[in-house]
Image (cartoon, rainbow, N blue to C red; front, side):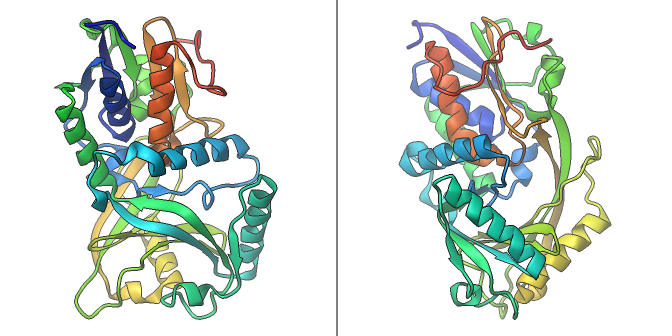
Length: 347
């Protein structure tokens, strides 16, 4: 536990920074979050908590972290948040053609080999009747969830305020943080500006929001993930429609939605669920995922005063509970088993 008066500065006000701040405040730290006014990657995210359906051979460690964090979502992370932030319970992963079905079989067999089997099906339209004719093969991940990303960020901020967390403007240098005993860098793609040498780069991704209209077919009740001729697309339910995502490519810090990316998402979404063609195209946006070279987040201690919680890539919402617990353990001086050792990383 912190000593009376110990102060913590969290740099970054997205889902990771807020999760860390809330957990530290619950442990008795006096916490201040440095956050920007404009929304970041958390605002554009799909909000899927999907370690099974996002898994791929070679990413066993990321799968393990994701499964541990999903359990925390189920077992307490939602405490203090409105229940309606959860928009779906269960994922259905489907394939459009034979090559896509072969990829899904590979993932299913890999998950089984890891001891985390999923339910295979050759009758996907029995599970989700709105799927396109001809889509048969897939698997069901029963424990996966989806959350309204924007509602979660707002609810975490409100919970932080109830716990006494304060707010401050963003900083450009760690030397500007003078009134805190300990600092956590949690500002995504901007983390290397505070600690040069952190291997984090921006990866662009477009996301669309489709709004249900009167007379349209209903919103699906579960997350639909699909492989469409080798491309991945996801359909995530919201109270008023569906979030469709996401492209992924290197394009610096450009956040303007590109025609090609938006067109591919719309084509693939309608190839999976044709009824979406009648929905309203309500929003096109692009965000920048903070990616690392091995797709694993950087979570741990950098030096005696500074910790990092960044580089979560496409898994920021999924890994927020695990990250908060890992940072809390570092602050207690009892790192979680298996947590990375980052101290001494180049600056």
